[in-house]
Image (cartoon, rainbow, N blue to C red; front, side, top):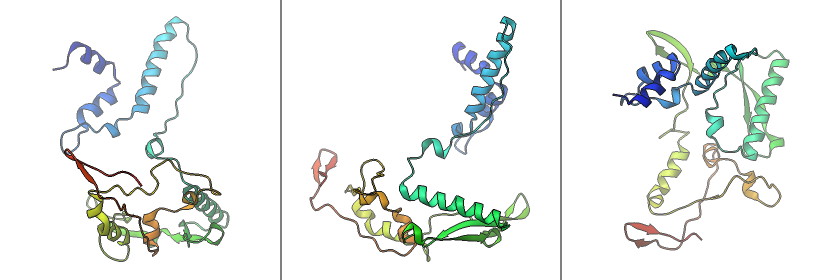
Length: 225
């Protein structure tokens, strides 16, 4: 049973938000907070407040435009590689459209080489599709990209398997600080993601601490090199 204060707060919410709080639950019975449209809640409460102010002389209009900052809101800053890769994809997509090449997804290959040697083109959407059963009907969908545990694209997982026992007791940070953008004095700024390097066939080595960890109570202490 809600307290009077909580009940008043609940009644203040727009009906669609109350429905999301009451009806949308995950398999464990928890409210799916990520699915609550907080941007629409903010707009609805502003709209209600402005309507109340009309009796006091308010004559303006309010037409909100919604955008949910999901990954953008919680992701880190893009690296130099991220920015160059996305710029190349966007430029390729526009070039395909200008030349009347539709039904294609922009593609950039040869990513281990310098940017000027990247190979841009288009891949037919149909070549990426598989048939899945959705609501009783066969539908063409783009296959989900999952972590490959075996096969030709399992190199990242195999690399992780080779070091995971050491990771249980050892900190093996490659860049413990923020994203770097100094391409002149910091070589790390030009690196591409380790998983992508492995998927493209590059072999990686990782430096391992030489000092043995010391037990301190229930914890293991290892000074950073």
